[in-house]
Structure formats: structure tokens, C-alpha cells
Image 1 (cartoon, rainbow, N blue to C red):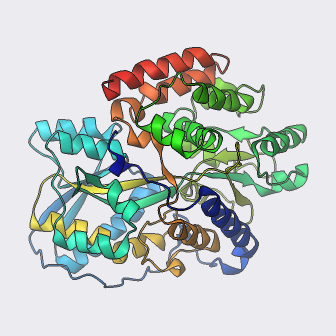
Image 2 (cartoon, one colour):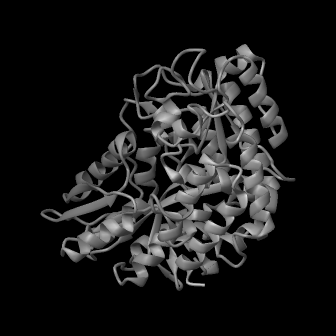
Image 3 (cartoon, one colour):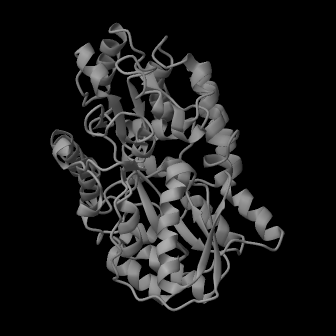
Length: 461
């Protein structure tokens, strides 16, 4: 992705955003037990009825039908369907969720070639939005949705959905991708402490290992988890300017800064018995299992820590662990001078324009839709007018506050900014190169050469 409009630019210091996040997490983990509901769980939240606010006027659409495609599965899909059900209730339209597969651009291409595109697609990459526009598939959102975006979103989140100055994407879901979740009983038994720096993380890992528990669980079967590891290390170590340059392929993957980041990753990925199942096991472990195996087995789980975003809570809810008690979290440690703040997100894009499709885009841009899913857990909204009290526990409430307070002061997921052939395709590009690197962390130069060759092909330079 070469357009600077699709890269969040720093408006304040990253250190300030990191301090906000660290403070928020510290508060939330000491107060969470007093705020959680005793109700049964669904997703990460509870089964009580979510509020149905009404801040946006929607047209009557009786008899209209819509299809919405997304790669979401499990509780994430189920919770989003409740948002769609509210839209149906308000408008009279019928909305069908269409399960998609990665890479979603390829999935959509087959649907469009068959003459049956979904009305709206939820795209998980900035690069995918640009591809959809370049292929002539996408339609800009109308004035009603734009009005909601201007009222409810920072300029940076609006810009992420723009291509050549036109608004195509409505960022419905955000992710804080700079978190490490840990099994609190394991830490307590080992006498391990939450680290603030990379070296402290290595010390914590060794302390956990010495207690008889494997330090890390990695869902290496899903290559995107590995790109997220790399991005946090690279942003913290190389800094935001280099991060922006590499994201746009203005510097090569053979740059020494990439070597430095891979060398840091090898300190964990290449350490014998630091990864559950070893490299071979990690490469057969999908993301959901990487989370659940960290929080099952009492004080002898398969691993003590798992890196990934706030959405990990959805998978923790499938175990007996409770967020804020057995399952706790700390910000990704600083590798360089400053801890990283990396975000991701999913945007709604109209593929088959109609009054109903525009109305759904408007609804998804409003606080109404986000407030419903916020109450179900495992979700963060970039919508600044969602009341933090809508989130079901103190951990998520403080994460939401930190996300909004940071404004535009973060970096968006690097691989999601790239053309999907490089940054978002299973078995190819960055996903495959980092899977191979997990298998052989000594091959730093070879990994760099592969990444550069794949990036040059995808970016066309």
C-alpha cells in the first residue's frame, strides 16, 4: 500500500499512547474482579440483553435482502449476527451472513465472477480495500454513512477507509495487537513478574520454564499471528518512521533493521523448549487452540503465555479461566526505547450498491451497532462515541478508553497495509516466510531474501 492516506501518522508521541495503555491495563487487572458480572458467559461478555440505543435514523426496508461476507467464525460471527439482527429489527430488511475464507479478495473474486457478489464485505486489510477499489468492485459510502464517520471517528480511522480521497471503508472493529496474555496461577507458582522490556520478557520466560511450564504458545498454523509478532518487535526496535517505510516497501526487507528484528524473534522462537510443541507443534496449532491451551490444564497448561490482541478474550471464554483472574494481560514489552502500539481493524465495504447496503454501512458507522457488540465481549470499536460502560468487564473498558485516548497515535498492522498476495494469503508471502523462519530461526538472511523477493513482486517494484 503506497498511499500515505492509508498509514496512520503520529500526532503525539508513541510513548504517551503506550503509557496510557500500560496504565489502563494495570488498573483494569486490579479492579476487574469487582466489576465482572456473575451472569453466564457468551463470547466474553454475559447473556444479559445488550442495550439497543438509537442515535441514527434508518429507512424502512421491508422486503429488501442483503448478504454480508466476512471471515469471522465462532463467537465472533455469532456476536456480529446479533448486530445484524438489530438492523433487521429496525429496518425490516433480511440480512444473511456469508462465511468467507482467506484470502477474502480471492473469495470475493469468485463470487463476483459468478454474478453473485455479497452486498457488503468485511475486509480485514487496508490493502484489500484498495484492491477492491482498483478492481472496480467497491462503491463509496454515501452522505449518511460519511456523516456518522465524521461524528464518531478520528480522522485517522476515517483515512484508513479512503482510497484516492474517497470514503470506501467503514472501520467497524478495531484490535489492540500489542498484548501478551498469561496464565496467572502459573506466574504465581513460578514467582514470575510482568515484564516491561524485551530482556525482562526473556527473564520471565526462563523463570516460567524453570518452574516446569513451557513459556509460550504460538498459533503458527495461522501465519498472521507471526506477522503480528514481527510488527511489534520491529516497531519498537526500528521506530515508527522505518515501520512506515517498510510497510510501503520504501525500504527493502533486506534492510539491517529487519535483520535486527528477526534476530530478536529468534531469541524466543529459536530457544529450545520455549514454544509449546516446538516449532513443528506450533506450525500445526491454529490461533484459537494457541489461546485455549494456555488457559486449560490448571496450573500445568501447555504454555504460560500467548501473544495476540484484545480479541483473545473470545477464546479465553471457551475455557474455565476468567479474564482478570486466571487470565491476565500485559502490554507487549519494549524492545527498543518505546513499547509498541500496533492496531488492526475490519472495515465494511459496499460491493453491490443499494439503499439497503448504504443503510447498513450507516448503521455500522454509528454507535448503535458497536454498542451492541461491545456488550458481548471480545471486541473493540474505534467509534469514539461508544460509552466505555458498554463493555462487559473492566479489562475491556480500559482498553477501549486507551484506544480512543490514543487518537491517531499508533501504527496500523503492517501486513494488512500490504497487497494481499504478500501480507494476507495463507501459504504465501510474509505468512509463509515467517512460518519457515519459525521452523528455522537461524536462517535470517534467507528469510530476508525471501521476504524481499515476495514483497517486490506484490508491490510491483
